[in-house]
Image (cartoon, rainbow, N blue to C red; front, side):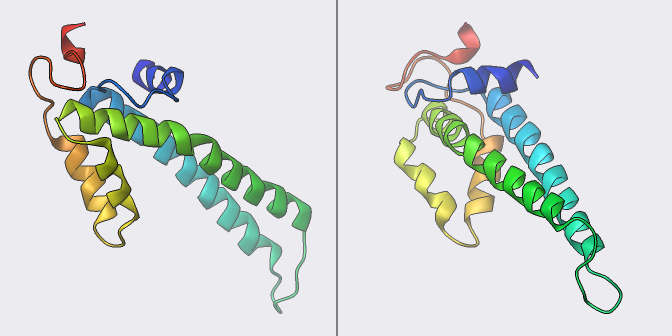
Length: 133
């Protein structure tokens, strides 16, 4: 949880470097929370549809849960992007490569590869080695 909070504290810093541990923990925690929220939304949505396809139950609850899912996704967008850019800096790549996540099909694979590659040892053009701190 320390690394997740560390990434959140540096949510607007696009310079510097982020350790592999910081990036992976941040991705793990945010994707877990988002997955739970999406599954809760889908379950609530399906439970409001009656046997004959009519809407029953509390539709307002489903709408609010949907807004919660979208709100969390929007809230976490900037910190996710900043930790990705700093992770790219750690492996010696430009932060502009973070735009590859928007390429359908290979965006997810790109994120996985970025999470697995070891950072450059010692200082690079983006800053000091975060492992030495």
